[in-house]
Every structure is written in C-alpha cells, then in structure tokens.
Image (tube, rainbow, N blue to C red; front, side, top):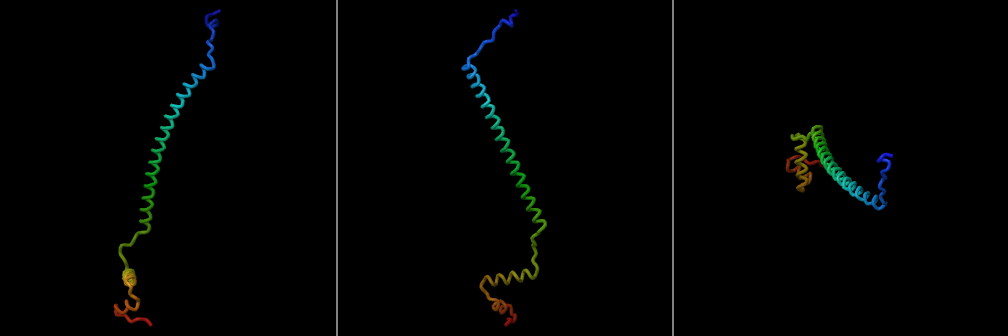
Length: 108
C-alpha cells in the first residue's frame, strides 16, 4: 500500500473542535462589528444627503409659491385708505369721529 493510505487521520476531540469554533466565532463577531460600523457610517451619510435634498426642495417650493403669489409692494389708493381707517379705529376713534375729522357728513 501507498503511504497515503497507511497514514491515518488524526482524530480531534470534541473539546478541541469546540475551541476552534470559539476562535471562528470571535473572528466572525469582529467582522460583524466592522460591517455594522460601515452600515452606520453609510446610513449617516445618506441621512445627511436626504436632509440636504429635502432642505433644497423646501426652498424651491417656497420660491415657487412666492413666484406664483407675489406680494404686492405697491398699495392701491383704496388699500391705503382702508389701512388709515383701521389705524384710526385701533387708536380708539369711532366712525363718527373719523368722519368729523375728515370733514365729511355723517350718515344718520
């Protein structure tokens, strides 16, 4: 017979195999921890990107709304008069008093 056939395999005890598995488990736990850390870093990066994009979207939506509904800087004559009457009423003047100060006849 050849040497390979006569050579017997070394049998290891269950305790020896269990100790080897402990080493493999420790190695795999390290790998798992590294992968988890990479995942956390990637998620943080993507969260930052998402937040940035959402901020840009909100800014563009605000610009769009302002563009479609511009605030009029110039007031019409009627708006100016209404504003004056409101201010006079806030200061405590009654409609009759306002009319009298303007020299207008009061309605009775």
